[in-house]
Image (cartoon, rainbow, N blue to C red; front, side, top):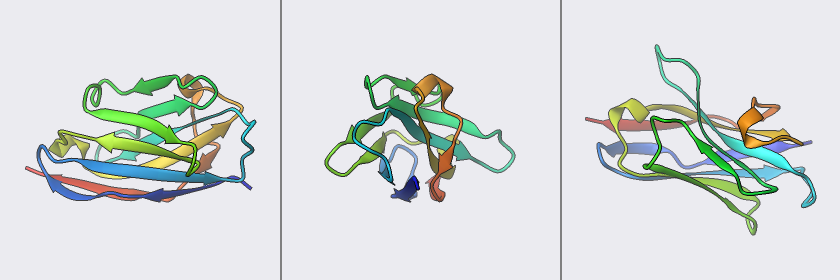
Length: 123
C-alpha cells in the first residue's frame, strides 16, 4: 500500500520560513508518480499549492505561492520537500501531501493522502 507521512509545519510570523516534508512508501523506484501539496483554510477553497512529477522533475505552483515556495524531491529519503519562504497570513491553513501513481503533476488529484499538518502565519 502507498502511504504518505507529512512532517513539518508550525507557527511563524509574517516573512518567516517553514519546510514541509512528505515521505512516501509503498512505491517502486521505477514508478512514475506525481506528488505534491494541497492546503485548506477556513472559508477558503481547497487549493493545490505545488506538485512535482518524479519522472521528469516537472513542477507546478499556485500563482499565490510562485517565487516564495520551492518543491523538490529527496531520493535518499524518498520524500518531497516544500520550502516555504516569505510566508504571509494568507498561507495559513492545513497542508496535505498527496500522490497519484502513474500520473503527472498537472493531473494530480489525490489517489493517496497523508495526514494534514498545520501552518500558521501571524501578522
